Length: 183
Length: 260
Image (cartoon, rainbow over all chains, first blue to last red; front, side):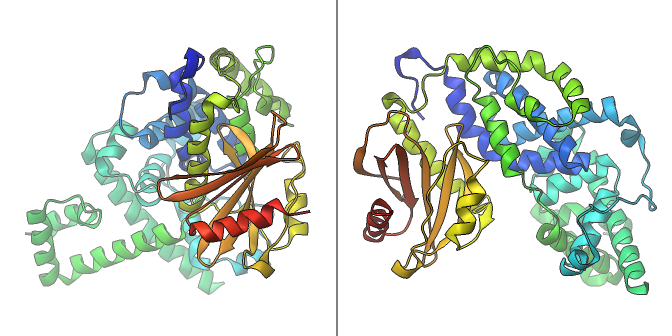
C-alpha cells in the first residue's frame, strides 16, 4: 500500500487500485444487466472507470464497491437517456422478447439449463427500475439501505420495487416454463 | 397479524431486513395461513434459483486488459485511451470520444506523475499487488480465462493478448497439474497468470517482462498467510503465489526455474 516514496506518486492512484479495481467485475455485470448489450456495457464501463478514477479523490466512503456501482449506474442511465430513451419509460411488457444471441444454436441452448435461460430472459424483460433492484439484491447481495442510497430512492421504494419484481418474475417464469413444455 | 400486513412483509422477511420481533410475528402468521406461507415459499424458491442461476456477466479478458491499460496510459501525447482507438466501429468512436476526451485528458495528467511501475521503490506495493491478484483469482470465481491442462492450448491463447511470449509447461507428472491461464493485471499492467493445482490448493505463476533486464535470485516473502517466491531470469519476472505449504511451493519453484 505504501508507495508514496519520494513524493513522486499521488496517493489516490495506489488507493484506487486497491479499493476500486477489485470490483470491476461487479461493475461490469451491473452495466451488462442494465444495458442488455455487451458492446454498450463495455462503452459504459470504460466511461465509468475513467470517471471513477478522475473523481476518486473525492471518495470518502467506506464502501468502494457500492461507490463504483453507483458510478456505473449513473453512466448507464446517462447512456440510455442519450441513446435509448424509450427503454427508461417502458411499462412492464409480458410480450417483450429479447433476441437470443447469435451463437445460441438449439444444441447450445439444450445444453444450458432451461431454468437458467428462462430466469435470465424473464429478468431481462423487466423494466429497468425493477431489473436494477433485483440484480443489486440477488447478484450483488446489497442491503435495502445500500440499494436505496445507490438508486437514490427511499427504502420503501426499494422494498416495493423488489416485491413487484419478484411477483412479475414468478409469473413470467411460470408462463415461460409452461410455453416451453407445450412446444 | 392479518394477511394484507403479512404480504407487505414477505420480501423484507426473505431478505433478512426485519427486526426479530416482526420476523417472529410473520413466521407465526405463516404457520396459520397456508396462502401466505405458499407465497413466501415461492418467493424463496425464486430467490434461491436467481442466486444460483442468474448469469454473472464476465468482462472479456481483452476488454479488461484494455480498460486497465487505458488507466495506465503513460504517454501525454496520446490523450485518447487506446481502448477507443481499438474500437472497430466508427459510430461508437464519435459518440464515445465526445464524452471521453476531457476525462481521458484528465487521466493522462494524473498518470504522467506516476513513477515507473517496476522501480525498486515500489517493491513492497508490488508484493501486495501480486498477493491481491492471487487472492482475487480465488474469490472472484475467475481463476482461468482459458481452462486447459494442455500447454499447447494455453500458450497460444496468450498470443495477441500480450506483447510478449510466455512459455508454458505442465508438471502434472511432478504433482503440479496445469489447469489453465488467465490474463491478470498487477499494478495496472497486464501479466500472464499460469494456474496450477497442488491437491486442492491453487498456485498462480505470474509472468511478465523484466524491464530492468537483470537476473534476480529467488527471494521468498510471506503475507496474509500466503507465501510467494519471485525471481527474474532471461528477461522475465516470475512470481509464484499460493497458500500451499512452503516446502511444496519451493518444489514448484525449482521446477519452474529449471523449465526449458
